[in-house]
Length: 120
Image (cartoon, rainbow, N blue to C red; front, side, top):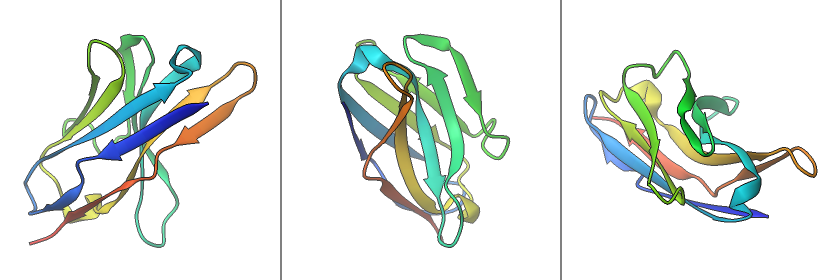
């Protein structure tokens, strides 16, 4: 079992910045990838950014956020962050932290989500 708790969402003006946090607990040693997804009203959940847990040099970003969003983690590996800059109204969504485990079975874990609203 893995528990994920997000925080840091809110209302921000276009061009502004926010930093989301996700505290990770439980079977951390089993995590293969750790990352962020988002879901806007009426749309499917989409991938934003992820890295291979324990190896912060192996990461990936969605084209829509490259150059604006940065994923990182603390030294202990218990918190993952999403720094979001140059926010646009189309970034408005509920943002979810995600952990993928492969052993003993492929399992996705999700946090409860945090709302990000970009509006003037």
